[in-house]
Length: 365
Image 1 (cartoon, rainbow, N blue to C red):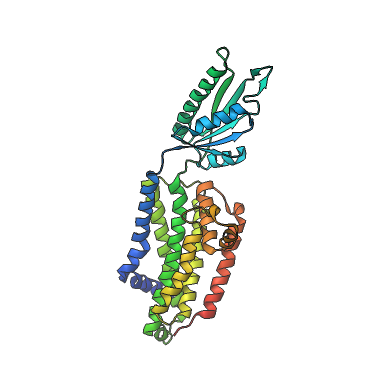
Image 2: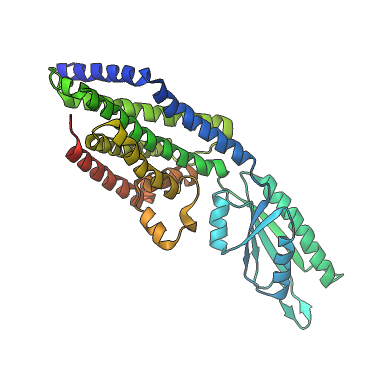
């Protein structure tokens, strides 16, 4: 091991000690995210128990419309009319409990007689209870319609089938967003405040007078923040899995690499702020000016689909949007790097931008 490596390791060890002497840093880096995760976890368990049904009506007949109206009157159902492809995709992601497909011949009358029609329902094999309960209620409704139409042969039927799908819930959507928020705040606030404090105290200037090259000190500080952020993410995922049944559909390796990239982006933002600010009073306003819009508009706690078109187009390019979207696609839908090229390219473009700005702004004094 050469002298440079020993110096770097020694500075990294010293940086760990400096970091954990600050009790507020420990609370901020771990306890606050755990508390938020617990709140969202318990809220997700207390959300509405209404069964979500996605209906595709190919018939457009009077009987089909009456059938949908009858479903909407069931208090236990939340009925959404959508295309067959969209409903199947949502069922696969766990956003629906049951998919209902009304065929074209449902309710069609020929020679004064209603022709036989079979409604198809699809439920999630990973959580069949909800789908089967909904199917039973629908079968009862169909039986009632059938008795009104004829007292002879059954002409309306329900055929139910299970499909393989991801057993996801609201917490599975929230956790990747919460992880994105955590790595952003640890990167921005952890670096910016600590380095400005060192700059203001003259510590960075004194380091320049030592035999150790100052860049090793910066790298040691960045390594500590990277490891602390990774440890926080690991703990949050572990707790979320154990207590709230978080489902990782994709690869943990892919998820981890995206996490590291996100951490590096926001470490760069923190260094840029630290390089520009002269004292700690300048850090908070700038850091909040950057992180608040990202928190509110990057879709980490709720989908951005409800945004006005112009706002959604702007927020598409936010660094936290790329990170949170990529983490969610891997965790919730099992996607790989090849499936999310826009997010990957966006994150690497932001890496280049933030470090170019950080190098331009960074000052030792």
